[in-house]
Structures are given as C-alpha cells and as structure tokens.
Image (cartoon, rainbow, N blue to C red):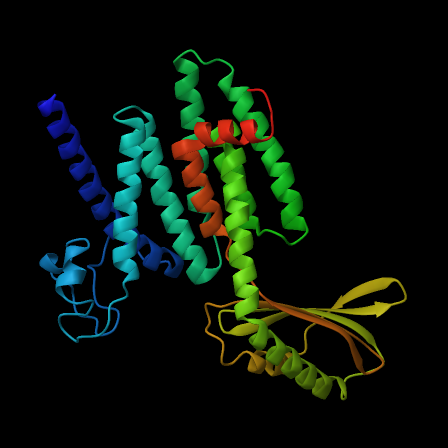
Length: 350
C-alpha cells in the first residue's frame, strides 16, 4: 500500500512539473502567434531590453520567484501572468491525471487544456480566438469518436455529431444576434464534438461566468462609455455640419488596434445603401479613443437625421473565450457528474 501511495505521489509531482514546462512553452505561443512570429526559432528574450534569457532563468515558476519578477539584466518588471500560465497548466494537467490516470483520455485532456489556455489569453489580449485552437479541438473530438468506436461504443459518433450540430445552431444564432463572436461559435461547436452531452454543463458554466464578467465590465466602464458617448456626439456633429446633415445615416464603428473602422450607410426611404467612409470622420472618431489601450475594443452605432444624432450606443467588446474555456475544462474533467447533478436538479431521468 505504501508503495502504491509513493508511486501516485511521484506521478502527480512529475505530471505537475511537466505541466509547468508546457505552460512555459504556452507563454511563447500566446505572445508570438498573434504577432506571426515563429514559436520554434528565436531564443526567449526580455521584451524590454531584448537580452537573451539564460536557461537557468527559464525554470517555470521558480525563476520568476527567485528574480523577484524582474529581468536579471535591466531589472524591468516581468508580468506575473507568465507564472500564472505555468502554474495553471501544471494544475490542469494534474487534475487530468487524477481524473483519467494513464488512459487515452489523458493526452486528449492535456492537449485540450493547452489549447484552452492559449486561446483564453490570446482572446484577452487580441479579442480573437485562433483558428488553429478550434481546429485542434475539432481534431481531438474526431480522435475521441474514432477511439471509442474502435473500443465498441458504436453509438458515440452520431451522438457527438448530433450534439455538435445542435450546439452549432444555438451558438450560431447567438453569434448572429451579437451575443457571441465567430470564434466563440467555433469554440463551442468544436468542444461539443469532443464532449458530447457534457457540453451542457460546460455551456452553462461558461455562460454564467461570461455574464458575470460582462456585467462587471459594463459597471467598470460606465463612466468611460458616458464620456465617449459625449465625445463621439460632438466630433460626429462637427463633421456632419459639413457633409449633408439632412441625410439620414447609420454609422457602425469598431475601435480596435488603435484605430476606428467604420461601416457607413445612407438611407433613402427603406433602402440602406453602403457608402465609403470619410477619412476625416475616421480620424475624428479615432481621436475619441486615443486614450484607450490598443488591446481594448469598443463598438458603437450612430443614427442621425436632419443634423441630429437620434441614437448612439457605445459599449466595450468583451472576450468570452476565457469564460467558455473554464466551462469546457470543467466539462472535460467532471462533465458526467455535473450533467447528472443538473438532471437531478430538474427531475430529469438519466
């Protein structure tokens, strides 16, 4: 018995350390892939002074703690997020080992968790979910279906495909209505292919966390939105006074990567005709967001007629990828238990 316990403890330690090492690599992926940089070539370096980081300063978690969160060469602050990613990866890999031991589900789980961590932080930084992440999760789903079919579970393929199809329809409608982004739609559909019915508790957790995050962002940006609404109105009316103010217009704008992108329409009766955006208007509205970091995105819609702004809505765009990823990770680890609990709560027979 003592030998079994010692073996389990040793394996848990090895899996956790392995996870932190992979987490260190994921930091490279998170930083470099959105910038279209190679994740293989090019040594790790300080983003402030450019000094190459020595191998002994690349030990996951420990190096950051020993250096006090600062670069050895220039003493610039190193974000604690690198250590958070390493520790989070280690913990998730450990939970996957505890849940699945050395079964075929272990490699599927750790690959999934690596993809979820990568897409979550990329989504937070750049408001986008990479196609390679959702493609990888789709491949995991197909692999799981193939393995289970070979092992004699002949019904799994149509069950998972049916759940993925239903999930695609529901999340697709939410994406069309503006509740989710295209990347969120792809993430949930790919995850449904992998999780099957376990996507139900995963989606529930993700939606609840996303709603909490969305409400907190809305509250925290209330003053900013009010200020930007006033500035957009002033700058737009300033431009409108010189450009056919009587024309009925709808301007849909996105502030991202430090500039505004506008889609402009002029209304003629019931017809809505897209017209080219005036560069002067683009500059005026970009100026409104000059104090907003480039990695924060806002969307707005202006409706004007007869020289008056009839309606103006401004809101901060939110990254739902991290919240959905938490739900998906929970579904992968404890989906069956959560689904059974959910069904019991609502009196549904298993």
